[in-house]
Picture (tube, rainbow, N blue to C red):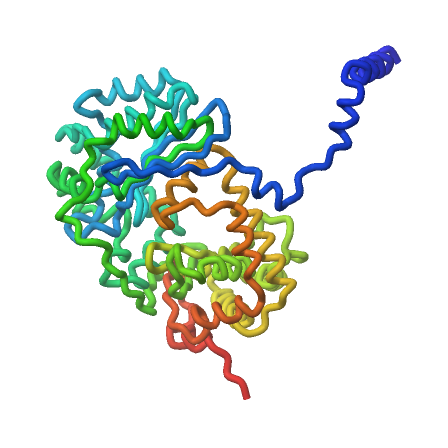
Length: 473
């Protein structure tokens, strides 16, 4: 009873102190959805003299993420140098002309910071998450590692073993293997067909000159974005960029531009009956980042959805395919995807299933694709748009995710698309738009197929191809 009286006393005391201010705060309306889209910090973008772009969003937080987004990845390699971009990402942290590897690691550790990197087919990224007060030091470190890497021979020899072990680990991740195979068949004979890590023979033969040549060819200022999010003042970041990145060259006569990668409908099958489950990906050619069909294809992707046996939903899922898969036990999981590059993309689905369910799963997937092309409803599109918005906006939770969004969009679009514009573009998608765009990219198109595992029951390619259209009497 004494505890109850204490709670009442605290409440009364609070009311007496804050009075009407508390009441007005409780009664004040919350922001509407549209107002919340506008109520975000502005993304400021500035280009310095050599062409390097600085983009930032200041949320006023105590931490920040600062990174370099570079328009360079495995797509810019050839057969002999495939793997160089990823090898360089590993070597970039092994010391510079100013800092040893130990000194670099201790400096980051003493700041309580986190330094990381990754390589994709079209981008290489180096970023640091630090306290806002340590942004100047983080920018200086990023500038040092990309402009003055030591690339010592002894460090390179050690790193070869690290990368070869990483390749062995990737080979145990069947989904990674399937998507590498999907790229190799869909873009056969082109740069996008190659893996990011490269073949083992290249890893054993890459030299220091190969790494230096890659830097001089692709690490030019107009192809680099210095992005920041969190507690970042744009003017301060701009000043730091002018101090630390002014010597990066504006162009390289060794780079002749992006080469278009031709899509080919085809298949690659790796049968292994000792595996317990079949892993299969089927895709068609999608569009690039900046294409007007990008958002409609995202919504179509959300309509197909994804499902896993661990999900609590399924029977009442908004995705028709998820309900079919669950009710008929067609797969352990499936995932729709929309992988985009500058000028092309892959739109499709990846699923894991028992060997005797492959045929039924392929049939159900293609049947749903054809329904999206011909008979999708406005209610389904509305649900998919809400799901897509939730997914996209949840991905912007934190300075690192926001910084990544800024860097990627500045490289791909040349600007940061405001959330209100993203929302508006998604809202413009209707059932009619979905049917039109899906008919363009999916209906009667040649798919790319990659399958690994006990795949004897997988329909042959011609039969899968015939499932990409419906005959009507």
